[in-house]
Structure formats: C-alpha cells, structure tokens
Image 1 (spheres, rainbow, N blue to C red):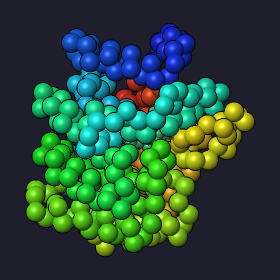
Image 2: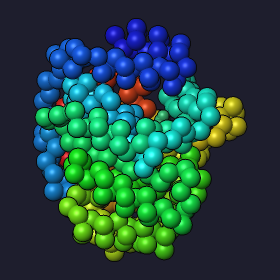
Image 3: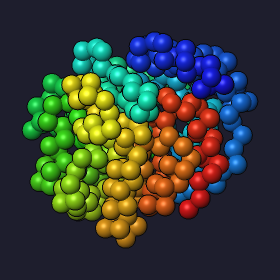
Image 4: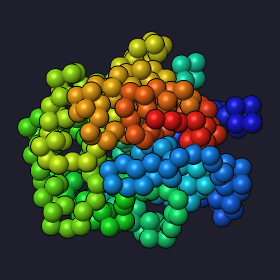
Length: 333
Ligand SMILES: Cc1cc2nc3c(=O)[nH]c(=O)nc-3n(C[C@H](O)[C@H](O)[C@H](O)COP(=O)(O)O)c2cc1C
C-alpha cells in the first residue's frame, strides 16, 4: 500500500513538506495504537549494545524527528531505538530552502538542512511528556551554527549536561556536511580534545554511553585516527555513517546541489567503513550501521560486516514503514 498509494501522494509534495506531513500524521492522538496494530507485532531478538538492552536491532536515524515530536507514533512502527536531534543549544533555522531533494530513480536524497531545530529546551519539554516503553532513546547533539569551531566543545559539553538524564545514549555528531567546518572536528587532535572535554563533563555528572557519528568520506588513515581518539577517550561506540559529499551514480543536476547524499548510493560505502572498523577494533567497539539500508538484505550486510545495531532514514522514504519490521524480523548475527 505504501509504494502504490502513499508514496506517490507524498512524492507530489516538496520533500520537506512531505516529511512535515508525515510527522504530523505520526503525532495524531490515535496514530500510535493504529500503527501498533498494523506494524507492532514482531518476531525479533533482543540485543545488548554498550551496556543497554534493545528490543530489536533496528533504529530510526537522527534527523527524522529532530525535536522529538512524534516519538510515540514512531515507537509504534516497531523501532528498537530512536535517535532524536541533531539538537543545538539554542534554536536555529538551518539553511535556506529548498534543502531536501529526492532522486527517485536512484533511491537517493540530498539534504543541506544545517540542523534546523527548536533548541534543547523544547526537545526536553517534549521528552518530558513522552514515555517510551519498548524503545531506547538516543539524543544526537551538535554544534550551533554561530558557535566558532574553536569553542565547539563548550556546546557539546553543555548539551551532554542538559540532555543525559533524558537519554539512554548520547551521540556526538561531528560529521554533518551542512555546518561549516564541523567535519574538521574529526581530525585526530581536534577529536581527542573534544571527546576528552565531553568525557570530563560525563565524569562530573551521570554516566551515559557516548557514541561518535562519523562521515563516510574519511580515508583509511583518517578513520584510524578517529578510532584511536575514541579508544583514547573511552567513548562507547561509533555510528557509521552520516551522508556523503560524493555524487557517484546521481544525475548531473546533483553535482550542483550543496549538502550530503543518502540512500542507495551510500549502501556499499558505509558497509565498507563498518567492516574496516570491526576489523581494526577486533569487533570490540560497538557499531551502529547506517547508510543506504533500503531492504532487509542491506541491513544484513551491515550486520555481517560487524554492526550490532542499524538505523534507517532514506529507506523509510522509499520503502515505507514496513521496512522496520522486515529488518527487525530478518536480522541474524
Ligand atoms: C533530510 C535528512 C536530515 C538529516 N539530519 C540529520 C541530523 O540532523 N543529524 C544527523 O546526525 N544525521 C542526519 N541525517 C543523516 C542520517 O541520520 C543518516 O546518517 C544518513 O541519511 C544515511 O542513512 P540513510 O541512507 O538511511 O538515509 C539526515 C539525513 C537526511 C536525509
């Protein structure tokens, strides 16, 4: 029904408008029980990762519900975890529109959102009113647009302090291509400095697992530097990957667009990165695999490469909500 009826209707709308409409539908009062009826029952295995038990291996990637407005409806789709954010300390509008573009023939999306969000206080107010029963909640935190890159650690530390009590895990997002210079934080010295500061904040507050979300465009040396920084500072896991700057396989019009590409063009690259991380760390660093999971087979390839959990975003746009249950039910490790 999604591919025949709902997707064609949504694809007539501007992508961001379609997304807004979907979130509105998911937050309607009866959405959760109705969706649970259609999507809820699952034949899936619980799994442990970074000290937490998850009801299944599939989660919703960051950026879908940035402000945590539709968590109950999203839980009813069967996600074992949901990552809200990226959230910043103060509200910000993000980049000018249009900033999301679909490439239906390639099952891809390019976005240059730039972390539009209502700020951490609004997110926390929404979380205060939400009680998830089966689904773990991650909060993905990011540097504000107007914070100079040299002071990025202040944002991440303040956000850890503000959000950790409401989160099962926290994600340090340093890999969005849509905030100027953000990805420079992935370089070895900058990353050790940043993660040490957040680790220090964690020591003086309560402990939550912290994961680092990386870009798919790092070369092997850069990736190994990130892994060293994670090990050195005692971080708990890695999320691989964010969107890519590459445009391989997309039409010429895509090369003119700013932003990061997601969906099928990212599938192989992010799996390759996961495999490298798993080998380099001898499987000891928990990996959440994300990037171009458009089918249960794509998810299985990420588990086979070494991911413990996976996340979806663009696959939800093209394959619809049934993908959640398919991945949860089919995944083996
Ligand atoms: C419209 C859009 C907005 C996104 N916003 C965020 C974000 O705020 N924070 C983040 O860490 N990742 C964000 N992402 C990246 C996704 O979480 C994911 O890492 C990436 O899209 C690759 O997965 P996919 O191919 O399944 O979409 C966004 C992706 C899209 C398509």
